[in-house]
Image (tube, rainbow, N blue to C red):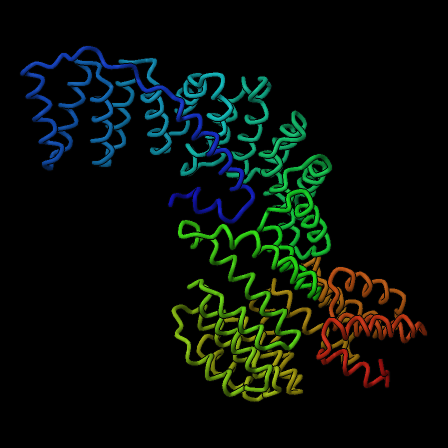
Length: 584
């Protein structure tokens, strides 16, 4: 698998590269080969020269073999011999010799596209990018009009391994100067330039290139994918272009990728809106139903999540065969795990286990068993759950970490905090630089009432990893919950929000600080925003208490009832109702 094939699986920009690559493949299939070689000039002397050249090339003296084959190529102007000379030089890792042969080939047959392409690729391989402009222009000029856009789209692949990305982008921009306003290729030219600028980390320049491409064709998918890949808080203009593109008749695939981006930045409500549009515009797009179901489950919309996930299964299972089995296994595993979680939340243990039994993905073997252990623990079978966890083989540190975190979760849910603390302490002593373990240890210490230990551990995490937003949030919320050092609590939580601006749980913590500080109106506003972004039982508990304190008791009860529907076992919600003596 090459560089592009690997990356296409993960990022929107690489979906773009895949599209460009497909265009290029179509173009290459229509490319004519070098002109037929002249009538054979083979005589006994030449035959002997070629024979000795091949024997040398294969017998440990590639330099001598190369010289003989190249000499024969020059005598005959035969493109096959020129290419053989190039191949010998490349196989012996002699880039300069390969370049000499390719240039001799191009000089002998100036119209040869293959010769020019070899010159271009060898120069790039040698990182002699300053010399690539002329052969790059020749390459573009050699395309037939109907294949020119596809050829231009393929240019970033040529420079994929160039070390000086800025120089590569500059060369491509110079080569495309005459095509940026040429009808039929201008959108592709600007998009290609945007891809090159992205590789060179000129992100503002890449956004500008995408903007110009979309100005020329507002419906063009490739520049939309390009600008989508550039979305980040530091480039707000990128998302503005995406939104403008989506106002029209947008490609469902682009809208789907936008939904993924929103989900990745915890903008759940916006992501859900985009996914609903995708499934409406293209109801047979299976992945959209899967992502929608996972998001709905995350929002505790169990019934709608179940419908979406089952719709995904209806679309995928009938088309599953030996050819696509590996490709669909991971996605199906995600669907089955999600359906099992839905059944688990309904306390239908038999149905949950039934979904887990359908998983056939080897990669998800351990995750499936860990889910099964969680099921056992929720039925009160803690010892059986721990035995199942510990019986599983671990093939990597990541798998060992998953086993540990699952066992700790099982112990915490069954209030065996001391055992969980000892387990984490032992693990942290073996890997003292693992701040995730230290954080987990702090959270268990809090459950045990050991607040000094919790604070010490969280400060250790913050000192080691200043960008660890969960530690700031946990410490700030703990102070607010105890109604102490509220100024410090607010500072910690604001810092956490700077690191994760759209996290509704951190927003909830900020609302709770404002409530503890007596700023009820501000607390209400913040908590309503958090609850809208992520309906959750714990946020419902806090929002309801603010409403209750403001005298809006009917509204508080309604919110609490919603919270109970979301999670009837939530400790914070149950404690709030008990403390305020509220019966729903």
